[in-house]
Image 1 (cartoon, helix red, strand yellow):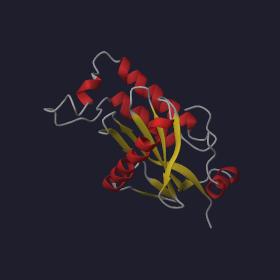
Image 2 (cartoon, helix red, strand yellow):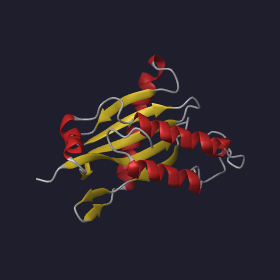
Image 3 (cartoon, one colour):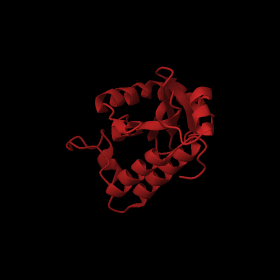
Length: 179
């Protein structure tokens, strides 16, 4: 049996009015091939996590790690983070998403993730989003479904932000300290 290691399957950036701002999918790697993921399936998974954010909202302060939102099965789990702007970051982890680089990484697939394993990824995503907000040409209200009724595209289309999210998703591994 080949040792497997957790990887990020998807990253979702969801607006304060529960509208998807950005969804990035990352393929599962099996030996020489990559398995693509279904965007509709992962959009539904991300959408299912919104109820959990709402249920935990009164007991949590804004800007914190919501931890494990729910585990779909023994392989796929969703973790959440809420920004002070009301934007939600959701990371979907595939516990067997890539070949393990070493024996220590393979243990994580068996033992599970620690509470702090995703913190560097969430902090890097938060930093990328803050950098996006600092861009004078980015108008966050354009991505608000309540105020932008005439716009058809509510997605974040900044190439710099999209590239940063892709970099975070591809480079994260359990135990990573800096992304």
